[in-house]
Length: 144
Image 1: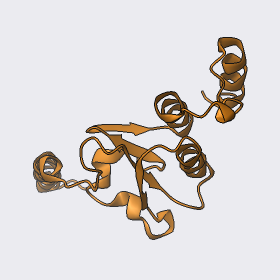
Image 2: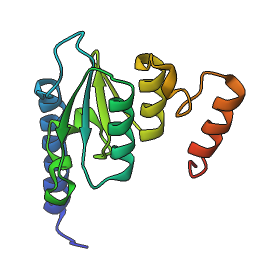
Image 3: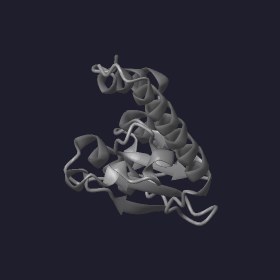
């Protein structure tokens, strides 16, 4: 490390300035979203299997949704506004009614529970508690 006492001062001032900019900027971040009451805004990347799960679930359940492609290969998940959507910088992520949500399996459950009205889709996420439990166990096999 540097023995110069000014190095610590510069680091502290720099960290404080960065913290202030983050805090101030957080309040003014514009997040692309649906108009209130129009459903979900889904942030996805085509090459992400978890994002494809949410995309297909949204289409199957006929949920009203707007899709935004976030290209991870270009680092678009690191954009300032995306911090509000998912501070972990991951897709998929959703905004619904001002609420931010992430984690593909939880999103798929939420979408089917709220939007699916077609009994023909019951085999994807059954309403019967015993059958649903089996699907939940299968979906959660890799969750910590």
